[in-house]
Amino acid sequence: MSAEISHSVAEVQGFYGPFSFPEQLLQKIWLRGEFNRAAARTMDGRALAILHPGKWNRLGGPDFRGARLRLGDQTVNGDVELHLYAGDWAAHRHARDAAYDGVVLHVVLFPPPAGHVTRGANGQAIPVLVLLPLLQHDLEEYAEDEAVERLANRPLARTLEELSPLPAAELLALLRRHAEARWRLKTHFARLRIERLGWEGACHHTALEVLGYRFNRAPMLSVATRWPLAEWASGAVVAEEVFAAEAGLRCWSLQGVRPANHPRARLRQYAGWVRAVPAWPVRLAGLAAQLPDVAGSPGPTATVRRTYHFTDWRKRLAREIAGGAVGGSRLDNLICDGWLPLLAAHGTTAVSGLWFHWFPGDSPAPMGRALRELGVLSARMQPACHGLIQGLLGWWLVREQAEGFPPPPPPGRGA
Image 1 (cartoon, one colour):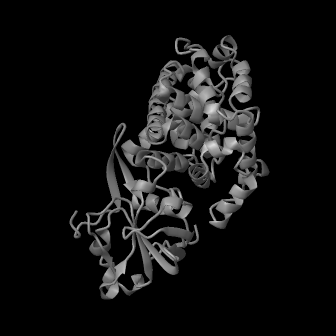
Image 2 (spheres, helix red, strand yellow):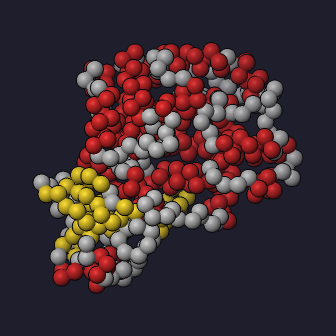
Image 3 (tube, helix red, strand yellow):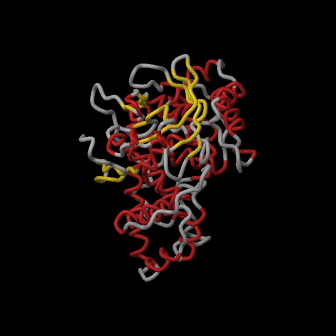
């Protein structure tokens, strides 16, 4: 890439075609620590410990002010600048701007050409960290999660305006089409995770990530990387020690987290789960053949759930896979966002209908409200289900991509 070309948004080929990956999303990944921090090394080979990522600067100058890092055996305080491509440092002429004289780390998404050196004022070399090999997810999955988070807070007016005129049957068919696309995308992401981590590792990472929703996904993934399932199963992992280790890195997000969702409580929950069922990924794979195939049952959700004994299956999955340690809506999240896509990616083909009609879990509140306003849901025959909510979410995402809904205003300083 030529140093004269500046990139603030990367166009990347995804499962359904190209998608955008903006520099602001890279900044959020750095701020939240959504990468394998334990394996971070600069291009010159030094181990990097991120003691504090810095304060997100939404004004001019470096992206993060006042970071605290450990480079090798040296503690460094200063600013951090992020780019998608390493050449953007030169393209933006940061070396000639005194505002960037305090930059002690240049973070880039894509690996630069061999031999690249980022140089600051007076030609001094600035350490470079490449994030792409450290990411816990595929780039498309990060972009997808960011879009979902953004849309969860959108007003309902446009949705109701565009979908209300559709006849009921046409609206339901549209939601089903988008739900099917969402299902294919989720199994695609699950397949990538299995390819990267293996079956047991993928299950372990997914379980801890779901237990960390919404605010502590990143540190939970860090926990999964640092403490693999075998260590939990052997009893070598103590939840309080794990929590303290991540707290020492200032990674947990605790503001506004309800007691039941506190990461210390979730870690204890997972420890109890693994004590009860140490080889739970093996048991999950073995149970797959017994799951009901409801793909050929297009009837209303209430009928499908009665016919195939969804409530009994919910209790059985909670008991036999999670050892009775997880229940309620978080169990439903595990089933729909974790176990069923993993099973489908692992070769179990008959679970998409189960996923569609399953209980909605912790779905965004605006989704349920919109479906009720549209008359899609009814208490007796068509209660809220995972597939319809995912279908509406999928429609929203496609509309945003097609028409370019304006992004929300950027967060203020200190975000």
